[in-house]
Length: 239
Image (tube, rainbow, N blue to C red; front, top):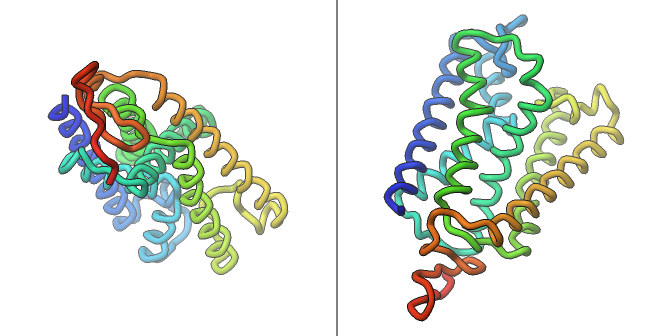
C-alpha cells in the first residue's frame, strides 16, 4: 500500500507541475490573463506572473504539488510542522475545488488550452489530492491544535493580498477588493474566509480520527506512527 501511496503522490506532483508549466507558457505567449481568459489590455509578463502567484488557486496547487513530491520521496515524514503543512495543502486545494464548482463552473466560457488549464487547476488536481488522502493516507495524524496552527497560512495569505492590493490596487478576488467594496466589507469577507477554512480544518480533523482508509495497518496517533494491530501494535516515538 505504501508503494501505491507513493505512486499516487508522484502522479499528483507531476500533474501540478504540468499545470503550472502550461499556465506560465500561456501567460508568456499572451494567450490568457490571470483569469484564464484572452487578455483585453496589455500587462507586462512580470506583472502577470506575480499576479498569477497571488491567486490561492496557484499557491494551493503549488503547495499540494510540493507536499506530494516529498511524500513520494519519503512518505514516513513526521513532526508538528509537517503535519500542519500537510493539512494546509489539503485544505487549500480542496477549498479552491469546492469554490470553483459552486461559484465559477456554472458560468464557465472557455475552450482549448485555457479550459484544460482550468480543469487541471480546479478539478483534476483537487480531486486527486482529496482522494489520495481519503483512500490511501494514514489516519489519526492530526491533533486539534494542528487545526489552530493551520490557520496561520490563510491568515498570512490574506495579509499579503490586502497589503499588496493597497500598493498596486489589484486584488486576485473580488471579495477582497478594498477599492471596490471598501475596507470594512473586504476585511469582513477575509474574516469569513478564515472561518470557512477553520470549519474545513475541523471536518478534516474529524475524518482523520474517525474514518478509516485502506492503510489500516499504517495509522498514526497524534502524529506518531502506529504499525500493526492487536498485541503486535507498536507506536513509534514522535519526532
